[in-house]
Amino acid sequence: MDPETSIAEHWADRDVYGLIVSALERASKSLDSLTVEDLAPVDHFHARGFPATVDLADRLPVEPGDHLLDIGCGVGGPARYFAQRFGCKVSGIDITGPFVDAANKLTALLDMGDRVFIEQGDGERLPYDDGTFDGAYAQHVTMNVADRPRFFGEAWRVLKPGGFFALTEHGLGPVGGPHHPVPWSEDGTGEFLVTPSETRELLAAAGFVDIECEDTGPKYLAAYRAALELAGRGELPPLGLHVLIGPTAPEKMRNSARNIEEGRTHPVQIVCGKPS
Image 1 (cartoon, helix red, strand yellow):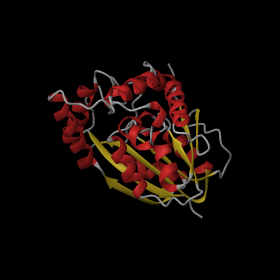
Image 2: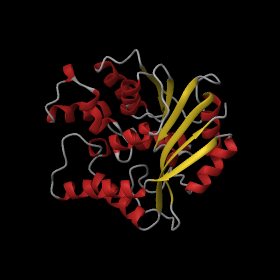
Image 3: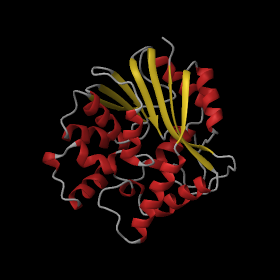
Image 4: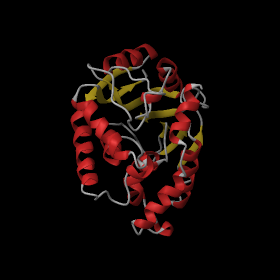
């Protein structure tokens, strides 16, 4: 099985849109009057969810009218948030069909189809012309990217000169050998972790400059611990990332926290740019 198929199958074994709609109903959220804020607890499908997206957005030089690319956009929460917050357009691409289907349906419910455009595709083979975007980002995608030089090269190619590229990921820690399952892999299949220093080197080799790397481990560890405490008390809210992760969410969160504590993974946020 090729890596792309493995990754897609890992995330595609559930009715994503149906799960979200059911969770919205349990939370007494009407589909006729949804807002970006209503969806935020469930549609930012990456580690730390919505707070991680806000932290990333706070670091980025986005201007009204910019056109951004969300690589590995999931169900589209970050794309919709960026579009609303900055008054920009966002194109999103994801390899998993049910994510793309859910993303487009949710975007339509919010009447944001004129600002957010999501399609199925591969981040290692972006279907866009050179120099199309003012900025691009990938949130917790690269742990499943087999060919990082190609992935970073494609991001560089589709950016305009002077554009930014940002990513968040669980890098490989100094101890290595993560415990599984984790949200991005059940048993290590389709997992391709590298250290933060290796990521920096690969970004530089792709042509990126001004590479800034922030250690986000303490934030992620605190978030995992808080979620585990709620799960332990049986108090997880109707809307949350556990809705899409499924029944194994507590185990995966527990392993994710343990991996950070033991130095097996090293979460980081990286922002860099394409030379003008």
